Image 1 (spheres, rainbow, N blue to C red):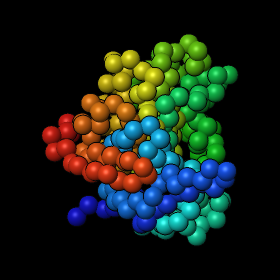
Image 2 (spheres, rainbow, N blue to C red):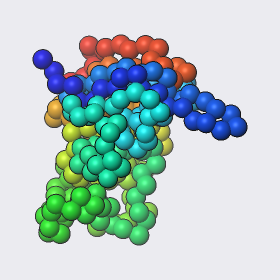
Image 3 (spheres, helix red, strand yellow):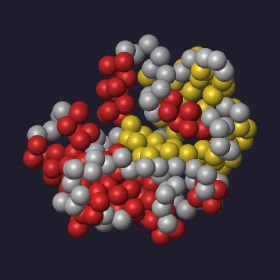
Image 4 (cartoon, one colour):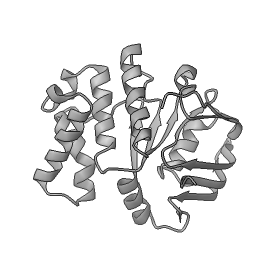
Amino acid sequence: MSTVAVETVGLVKRVEGAVSATLVNGVDLKVTEGEFVAITGPSGSGKSSLLYLLGLLDAPTEGELIIHGQATSRLSDTQKAQLRLSTIGFVFQFHFLLPEFRAINNVMLPMRALGKLSSADMRDQGVALLKSLGLEEAINKLPNQLSGGQRQRVAIARALANDPQIIIADEPTGNLDSHATDQVFSILRDLARQHRTVIVVTHDLGLAARADRTIRIVDGRIAQSACDLTAAK
């Protein structure tokens, strides 16, 4: 029986103000270890808002988020930050690499924040990650010396720096050409094969169709959830 990695129960995100809005509206969801899930939906549907809740980047108004069996609603901000740093890796549409840092130093940033490895071990691990993503020649280059696809692969290496079991990606191929898009998708697919949980928001329905399961969000609710049993494993 598959182990549940991420679960939500009645998850709600509401924003108050001159114009109040419900961004996520009563979402119940289970994602298992090693599953590759694509979240799709129209612009403004709440899919990115849901993703930020799943990644502990935002707090729900109501409901519960459970990560590897641990309910998170009563955790302190410090405890949530520690859980996020050690368990979840993030990849965004824009790579957000620090321009003054070389690729290896960008990858080492999450390791420094976690503080569990020596400088030498952090560098060794960072080099190994970059090499595993075909970036041997990029290790000591600055972001402006890299192509868009290379920068996004460095961002993936950074997301993997603390060996997280959950990878969350928000439109990770949105700014890439078709070749780089296929590269990034293949990397995410391989991560799921390694029993990591991969959750991706994407507008690319072609890529979404290759995931294990596609979840369509409309008006903050799950409108459809379908397995794609033909997805490349």
